[in-house]
Amino acid sequence: MTAGLKGSFWIDPQTSELLALSAEATEIPMDFEIRSARTEVIYAPMYLEDRRVALPQSATTVVENSKGIVSINQVEFSHCRPYSSTSAIRFDAPTVESAPPPVRREQQPIPPGLSLLMRFRTPLTARAVIGDRFSLIMEANARHDYQEGCRGAWACPVD
Image (cartoon, rainbow, N blue to C red; front, side):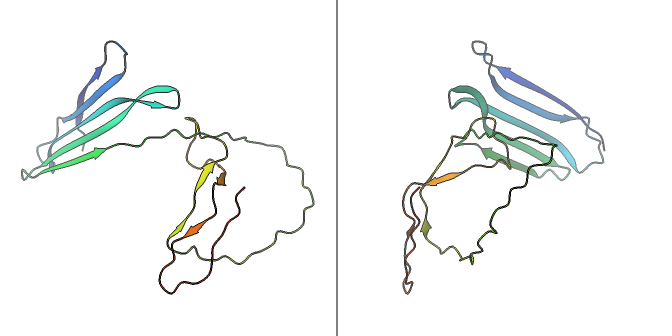
């Protein structure tokens, strides 16, 4: 099945920032299950670190099927944060240094109610992508909200 698509976009004349996008399916074959489909995305200016960027604020998709049943999907976006990291690709063989074998420690399950207050060792930037490595620093000792019958103490040293 092949259908067309038409749409519009709105730009702020003072800032040239994207305000909204809309798209609507056209030329849908009569024997297809979907009779109509349209999507609208509303953008809003946000500050990520020191950069002003237009990010999606909400999106609505409306689909009507051949039986006249209308489905509406609404999505709201909030709490956007920038992420970044650096990486290196090497094609030379790394030098192997002899190191003592790692000490194996038995893993303990993390108990329910354990609270960890941490901060990033280095701030994330807008260039971060999924899979980037990062490190955290414990800001305080781990705190466990003990449940009835739970005994023992959890403590993590602060870096």
